[in-house]
Length: 600
Image (cartoon, rainbow, N blue to C red):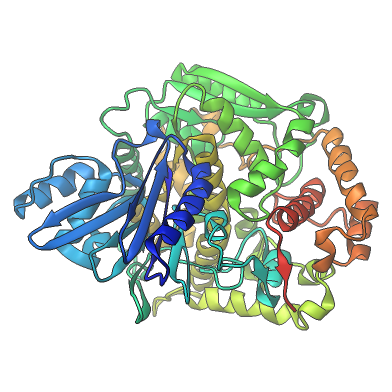
């Protein structure tokens, strides 16, 4: 886990470029401050920073073959390192090192842009070959890479904050940025960096930038529709094999004692069992033992199921308990880690949780991604929600539009609808798909492009800030490709959410866990947290100069404080009333700390 960045084609002197690179590098250190380096020439500045316990390569990495020099900066993990090294050896390449960065650079030398199709892992990287810059991001977008093009050339970085460290990239949001924050946040349109003139390379994209000629982007991976040929039993076997292979690939040779973030739910328990984890960590909150009350979204407390998995696997377990005040106090740190207002205390809880975990290990496994590919979310089980037009986790555009100054955007519904329409058109349909299968494919794309991306950013940024790497075996692209074409009645076997996965895990998990109803990431139910975030909102409401009022009507924020629409979730089951208030606290923090300018 680390950060990468660079400036290409600048027109300033090398000394000015070095100063700007140093400022960007300092911002990137939030993603890892132990090791860092730069490469500066008359055409380019490249920078890299990382946590020493997560990286064994010195970067930027420079290799000269013949008369050509290549320079690489890489962030990520390569799960098929050994297989690629063997393939490169057969092609005549002899590498002095076997780390991931070296293998990726030699893969580019061997196959040029097509190298990305050879990689299995999570990554973002950039390679300069003396005349052009090659940028690439993994298939599912689990590592970030932002960029901006202007008179300053091309600037790229792993974080928005590092981008804004460049003196010619201003912290301006226009009507689109305002709409992203209020109508879609904490999700955002794929490729959108929210700030004006900042974009993000999309999942499964690579790009070539040639100074004075611009950038050309290519989508090298997308989901393809195919007729599923296997029967149910064969599908169960394939799912089990793919998942086990994904887990085994991510268990790198030197890592003999894997740890798991354990909730006692189906997904994390499955990964714990398949990885033969011997250590686990769970998160809970002060007061949840008294104040937890079941809902359709969170029907049961995790504690009993965690205990069953501890006993089943003989895990060494640590329970981390977070308080309401520390959750609220960490909202600012979580915002800076993400670079944008995020999932409020759902972010800050993960950040605090991982900080505790990092004292004992630097790598953990997670069950993230299962719900997106197996159809585990509540909107899959409710036919009305499934077939309803619009993003299923954020149905009320009218409610959200109340929090956006009307002069900033005249047609909020049209803005959201356009992004929804684009996403479902990305779903490739098979000629023999029944209507329900067409809709399931569309929902698959909605979840991958939006809901998963929001959670993936959360995992990446909070983990990087805590000096951790969080691996998610369910997000192996081969599993994602396969499940895109598995029919819904297989996935929903016996009319049970993730019925196919449950069938594949029979004999691996105890039945009590195997058939547990889905429950989301645990959050605090302590009323003290709501009291605290309301107390934090009060001085913002009392100050007419609060930055947020250049974006949000004061009357709407006051109504939120007063409890109007307190029963309307902001972002699916994860963000209810307290988290909605915390989101707007983060918006104000972000606008203040980043000196955000709202352009009408």
